[in-house]
Image 1 (tube, rainbow, N blue to C red):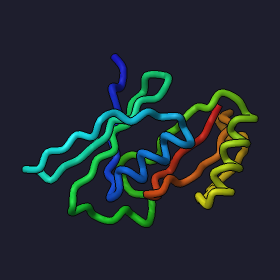
Image 2: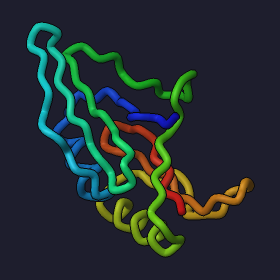
Image 3: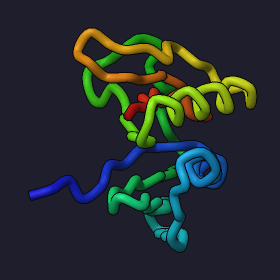
Length: 126
């Protein structure tokens, strides 16, 4: 078995898709739309075969200000510590919040933690 994809809600699927395409080389498929359900989505594919679905509906609840039960972050491996450092610096320079790192964690990961445009946590790791 394998995880087929992970999905996240967004109020602006074009902006979020462009973010993952620019910084993580994701490729967006065609937009899917269901007018009856007022639903739109993009599937983003990564070179590894992993996929992320970015979904939108008109009425979305605001994100939790504090950690809440459920998914906590998306970890994306970029291949080397130098790549973690470079991408973290690029994202910070472009105005995205760098929450932690780059650093070696207690469990041995080398990572930086940033927020995407919707405030979702991303661990950039080796």
